[in-house]
Amino acid sequence: MGPDTLKELFGEALAQAEEEEPQVVQFVVGGQRYALPVHWVQEVVAWPEHITPIPQAPTWLAGLMTLRRETIPVVLLARLFELECADQPACVLVLQAGGRRLGLGVDQVHEVRSLPPDALEQPPASLQQESTYEEIVAVCRVEGERLLSLLDLRRLLRRIALDEAAAWGYDAVSEEEKAASPEEAETEGQSFLFFRLGTEVFGVSIDYVQEIVEPPETYTVVPQAPPAIVGVVNLRGGVLPVVDLRQQLGFPVTERTPQQRIVVLLADEQPTGFIVDAVIEVCEVPESALQPAARPAEAASPLRDQVIHLADRGQIVQLLQPEQLLAQVRIPAHSLATAV
Image (tube, helix red, strand yellow):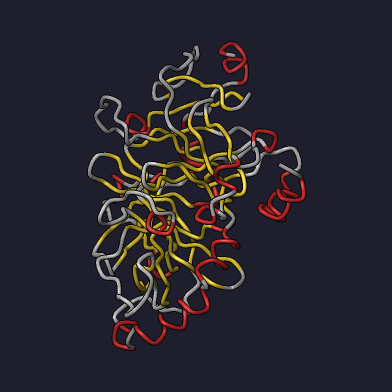
């Protein structure tokens, strides 16, 4: 894959990375794995309870969703690619390019990961000859086995004629539906990653999230490490300490499950991974939703001194402070060197 194509796909994110690898959001549709450059993905939300259908729209256009009083067309990628799919996707990738927003219904958001540019290859001839898959601009083998297809959002927008879809959308959604959202459209917000530990939902600012990966089968034990650290793993040539967030926050330790992920946080030069039970979504939250944690002074913790009140969902999300998390589990440099 040529450098010009990479620059077009990853834009300034690639130019600024220099020695770093460009990041992508990896997701699953119809049993197939796809990815989009992370700078096109604004947030990830659960499949909405209500989508306004559009008369005479193509079958791949599910309809229109309202997100913070903005109307967004939602495309079913499985139908667009003519894949077998579930009746209803699990979540929506909210994308933006060229000043337009688009929702992409997918079965599962798998992880955020870095891709070595030299691992990307031209799509197989069979895909290049199929107009159904013209959005696939590169492929690579993830972990040596699974085929990952990299999509170009701009090609996708051209194919679905977003201008026409948006025109349908703004006519189809009533002012009453738009007004039903309690959040103000003009309110500036912050993006947070929401994840689950047991039945409780936590959040961290997306600014600290470097990537999200699957847990490995084994870890290398680190001498003299804090109890919550399960060990270190090799992440593309670098040493990544991994923390059991359940143990750090005082939750009962459980067996590994397929939904578990490692959320890699970076607040200084050393990234650290935190095992969570499941990643839920990336959500943009208005400043007004951030509130002090309501708990007795003796139970207050600098780890959880704020909450996110999602009034439209009737949900409280506990906000974690990454600097405090990392300060509690920092590993001495000589211990890391011993584990390598």
